[in-house]
Image 1 (cartoon, one colour):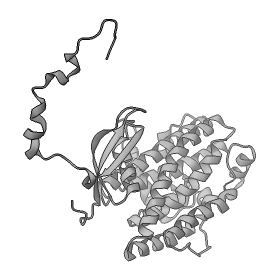
Image 2 (image 1 turned 180 degrees about the vertical axis):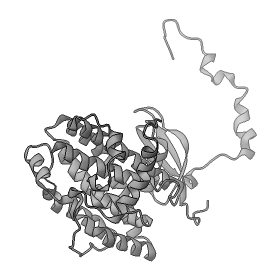
Image 3 (image 1 turned 90 degrees about the horizontal axis):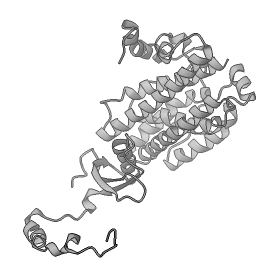
Image 4 (image 1 turned 180 degrees about the horizontal axis):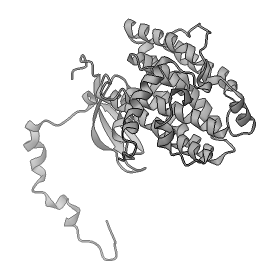
Length: 247
Length: 97
């Protein structure tokens, strides 16, 4: 059960890291290119911590790399929002903004986990996601309250990503059992605070909170959007072609 | 300075490596506002633990001496060695002055 939980956390960071890594050499200015790849590296670090711990918990000798590169799409449990393609810059910012706001709230709670390893990972990751949130929220403001075109692109991006936000707050029996035991967090309880947080920035940016309430789910059972399979094919191809490759 | 390119304005970056030490110029970055300048400076110049403090200053706010004035600005100090503390005799018992 704890193994499953660690996979979900690790997969989410790993998949988002890969998406942010895809921006490398494609940023609109050099500085932003580096900012985004820095964020990618933070997520890689978080993914490594979670997947290493997952391997320890499982106790079958699987390393972080075994878990990252030798599981297929249906055995990946990342949040759907993490796998969404980068799209244009506003799409990336909208996706990250929703996730970063959630992560700040989630890790603020998780650093009090009764599991010492998890509390340690959470305290470290919290510092990083706070910075990510600052970065993405600032861009929501800049683009929303920018030109007519940037405003429209930012609004379209928020509307597009909205249906994937409900998935972040879903609780199944794994989540509930761990939350009740003080190991995990009850994500559903964070939803109201999260909504306030994102609404504040969205309104300040002269944008509108999306009204669509239809939410897509499935990640807890390994069901994904069509985007994940393509990403994993690219991400895992090197490790699978050369299983003994070392840096 | 050109701000009508799509790179944003130029900012000079100063990093303080430890508390109480002076801020040192480390380079420059592009950004379109203060927050972005600070964040870009953080991402470019403190990735390897170089600092605990950052200043960013719009490059066009810096007033610099002109190389044309170099001789009149700096040459007059060359023959005034008595301005160096080494000119003074250390009093007995003083460890430093």
